[in-house]
Every structure is written in C-alpha cells, then in structure tokens.
Length: 298
Image (cartoon, rainbow, N blue to C red; front, side):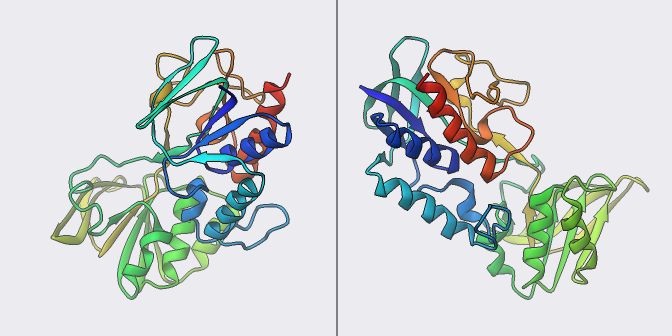
C-alpha cells in the first residue's frame, strides 16, 4: 500500500514524485517506457524553461529523471492496463502486477493526432513521421512537408529547414495558431514555402513517400506536392482511455480537473497534458506536480 501511485514519467509525473518524496510520502512511479521524460525527449530545443535557455529536450528529460533517482523514488517500467479508482483503495494493474494506493496521480500525457487519410498508416516509418527531431536527419538534402498550424508545426518546419533542400508548411487555414515569433522566423526562412488553405487528402508513393495530394480550398482544385517526407503535427490526443467511465472527461477526452488537479473522483488527480487547461507547457506540467501533492497532503 502506497500513499500515492503516479502513472506517467513525464515532467508532471516526475515533479509529482519529487514533491511526494520530499513530503515523506511512500510513492511509486509507473512509466511504460524504459526512460522517463515524456514528450520532451523528442524536442530538439527547449528555450522557454526558466533558468535553462536553449537546452536540448533529451538532456532536460535526463535532468528531470536523475533528480527523481537521487531522491530514491521507486520507479517501475511497467505498462498500466487497468485502474480501479472508484473505491477508497485505488488499484493499479500493470502487465505484471497489481499495486494499491490511497491516491493516484494520473500523468500519462498525450499522443500524436492522426490525419486519418489514405497512405498515412501504410507509409508510417517509410516517409511519414510525427517527430521531426527524431526522423529529420533521414531527409537531409531532400524535400519534406510539415502539416499543421501550431507551435509544433512551425518549430518542425524550422528544424527541418536546417538540413532539407526544401520544406513546405501546409495548413488548412490562412493564418497560424502558433506564436507570432515563430511565424516570423518561418516567413523569413527562404527554404520554407507556405501552402495555406490546403487540406491533405492522400499520401502516395511506391514503397516510400513520393507525393502528397491535397485540396486547395480557395480554388477547389486537387493538387500534388512532390515530397520525400510528410511530417504530421496536427495536435495531440490525451491518453485517458484507462479512466473512461470512471472520471469525468471533456468532449476531447481530457480529464476535467481544475488548477487543484482534482478529478470527479476522490483520491484521483490529473496532472500535466491530460487535464483540461489553457496552456500545456513543461512549466505548467511541473507546476501541476507541486500542486497535486499539496492537495493530496491536505
């Protein structure tokens, strides 16, 4: 029986674990990946975390994980397959074992949203990618297209432009949702060509990606882009399947929880990208970790 079980080893989960350990709680951290750190492990550069400008995402993830290790926090690399959280004692079942706790912090993060168009699944790993920092090196000197209009899409386009011959940035609207500073950098980068008011329809090729077919919303014409790689950055989907039917979720699948991180079920807390919030950044995830342990201790 633990005081708290934390599910997820990203910034929110690791922060929760650190604060729990410092509060002298017995804590178990469950993370299905061999290494903690979450999404930041796949980020080329983090330049907005206070006091550590321009840090590599993988390096920052290592720092977070090492901090938790120094405090002697028990971390188990097991995938959670079921959670029974409606009773006073919370049960967390993994592929290997069942654990019990008085409270659960759910910090499982989010995954990449899919386009759902023909060719997307067929060419996954053969020209279709959801991580420019992971796969961008394979397209050095070649042509790629980034699909999306938020910060991640803008950052991916800028990252790819460092090595690619040409980068198209495709967005279904004529304006971007991302930060104005990133938009300005994209507009100034000569290797990047904007393809706006465009809806991707199919990814085609012969063993490897050769072209992206799309609809020009202004002219209603169906067009093609000759590309070697398609990088998809159209948002995230929260990993909340394990809590469906147990805690309240919003229409997009995020756990309904306020700044106190409390869910609709006593003893179950949501931290990081899985909960309803306006800003999903490393700093807000880390903040959730501090808040949730304070709430558990009340």
